[in-house]
Length: 332
Image (cartoon, rainbow, N blue to C red; front, side, top):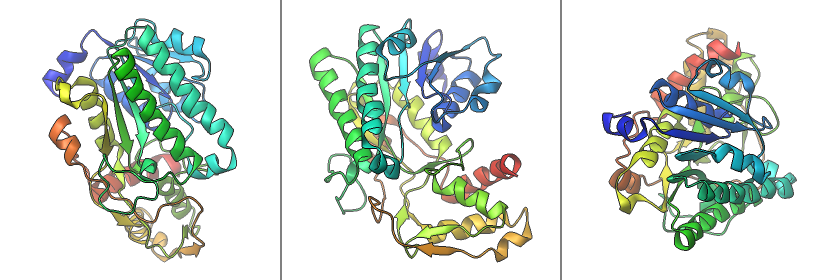
């Protein structure tokens, strides 16, 4: 965080919704490390108390247990708040296909509740987690913010609706927002368990247990994997920018390179085998492609660089090395 960013946020309070989740807890940690007052709102449906346990003794940190589907909880959380980082959502394409109603309740109704509560509380800026799933069936690479396709899952629809609501709140109420379209974020505190676990922590846990990770398809599908520290940098830049042109739009949050699932799995195997040589001989298995998955994902990050001074420090290799070290200490 630069001196200018610290100056912008000094004596301010930032609400992080979903602050006990993977991305949210990393945002809380970064803000607290820079002596910024943080309020965390979470209902612990996917977030974990252990993610924020180290912060509970910090007098700059306040935890509110509540649900964004409840407007009163949102209003309570937004009381005396200067900035909002809205991370609370139900992620996962497969989960949304299985249960579209709950995904919509959380991601659309909950999002609208937060917009209303933040607007009414006089919040200065509302930065929210958008999604690369919004690009849908648009095949061109790299993905550019102004060109999207048709959504391929209920989850993708909900995240696109968030962008539409954010735009309406700016044009109707002059309320400032920035949407961040995350591309396959990974890093410390990402949960390897459960039916909808992200691929990297899930594969790491399987390798550590000497179980074969299973790739959907032949492994040629590719993603723009994005290390958590890049995401934290982008959120802070979005919160603190003084560039008026940078407001009320959406940005890709990625590194700007794509890695196939097979390449990813081989990198994980290489880095983990430095801790345990037996991992070198763990076999990789394959199954059919998954419904709703897009084949390839690659972001243009030019808009973020130009308007928000985004400068991601971690590519897939050095990000994975950091992540694998953390996983090895915490998943063994």
